[in-house]
Length: 257
Image (cartoon, rainbow, N blue to C red; front, side):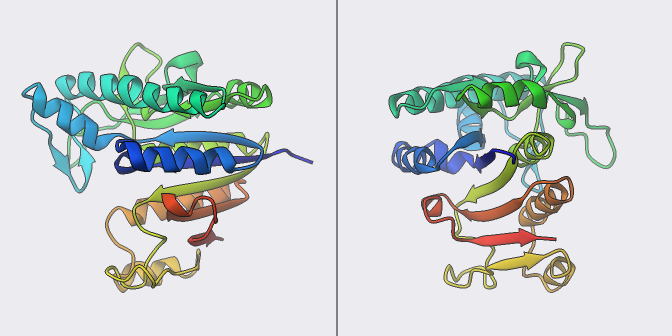
């Protein structure tokens, strides 16, 4: 029987504020058994870019990553945010290691081809070194993954944190019984955007097209749920979308095939 593994993806809004980060890490610590954390850090990257006089350009919520912005996100994601999380996990008694996709070839990507939009140095994941990640987890070490990958030819690439979490979950499903949890600022997927009490408890593969068509699910939630279905189809046991403050209760929206 496979050992259980919980993969938690948490957005920058949570990890960039001391009070929300502290609560998150205490709840993360309380999760029994093996675990892995994936983080964002977009607001910190935008703030650092502004301090350096570098303009942040976004299209549909996705960052355009030119050479200057790549320097910023590398410093912020792989350095400031990642190492701050690792230090605080160590203070909680969790033996964590901070990694980007470059470290021990954890995650390789292809540079996204230019179609309608040139996203610059943005990577789409093509390979995960699951054996290495599994070896750390089996030793009781908690990997903390920053949203950076590489192309195998020396080029760093900015990569969506939801994608990092989904690809790690898919690759590790061969080694563990994986639960993937996406944490963001809402308590789950909402039936009514302005009503936090209208959480949809369960979304199936067959519900999804209807909910997109009628506008219930829109914007960045669409690729998040698509990532969830891709993970389930690749062998991940369960996927939950919830608020970080609900991590200890594991309530929210369950995604299922």
